[in-house]
Image (cartoon, rainbow, N blue to C red; front, side):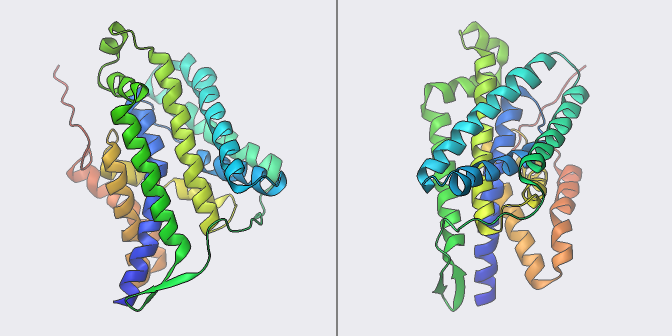
Length: 290
């Protein structure tokens, strides 16, 4: 029982970070219909931006997070304005190839400025542990779940209550109708990329604090694809369910079976859900009649 609780805590923490990363992916897809293959690199850039502010510039944690958020917003707007906007009207494969190229560029820039070695960073979350029903659970894992839950709740409130959130939902539903209502679609596109970069920044910071500031953060971002396919490419609630499901599955398989198999499980889930329910658990089913 104690082992199960410990694995669950680790899985929920990983799943919460995956949900944050997948949220950015879904935001971009819902607003712009772009599949962003650079989402993992957004996590990587976010982690290193926080490292720069917190370790190199020696800013307090709060100011380092604020600085990272500002950089993430600028990065998202620049990518949308100068990389994706010129491709409006081009084929889907062209846009996909550009996002793949963007991922390589972002990773190369990080390597150029920071190298490939692991960077040392003081922990920003407590490193102690608590005992629950005989299981020793790290406090930082519990705090990651709490922080991710708060951030996801704030994003949900933003979409449901704010003027810009309603505009984003309108554009996601019908761009032409949104235009007739006076909504700036290009501004919504830029906002979607900016928010995606911010969610990736937070996920990158939390992941780096649990593991290390290293290039492997981008690899962790690859698991976003099974998460969004499971939950649904256009479903924000699906990112939460998908992230927690994949995170728990990985930990259970690693703890009770084989750690090597745990790395493959997310992609087995991806194949299975594509065969059984291609639009995901919460995705909108689109039927095109010719």
